[in-house]
Image (cartoon, rainbow, N blue to C red; front, top):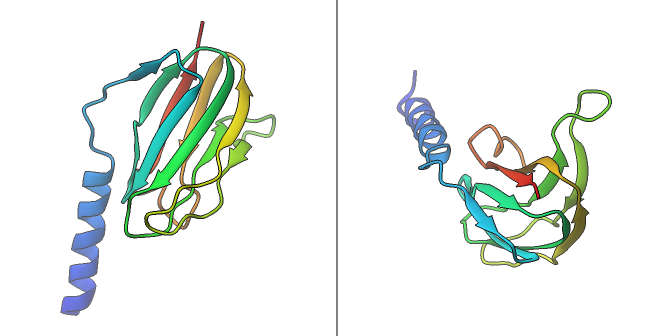
Length: 130
């Protein structure tokens, strides 16, 4: 194994470990706007609880790579995620046009759909409950 291959494997493993780390805190808000930041490889906040109704997602890429944000119902009728909304791909430092949705009670998934960012830990949970 070449040094470059070994270094790439080590960096990928570290990104996987660091990307999914977190203290498991849940962010709760009654406000109808969520401000989210994306970087390598996180969505902050990662675990969110909100009330049902209209929600505006304000998303900024604070990373060094391109990122996006998709809001999904994890298990659609065919077992695949159903996408409710998605930002355009953002370059580093950019803010996306807001996503505006009306959310019913349930559990939703927040995810970056670029390459393998999801596999590296760039995902979150949005729980909508009364």
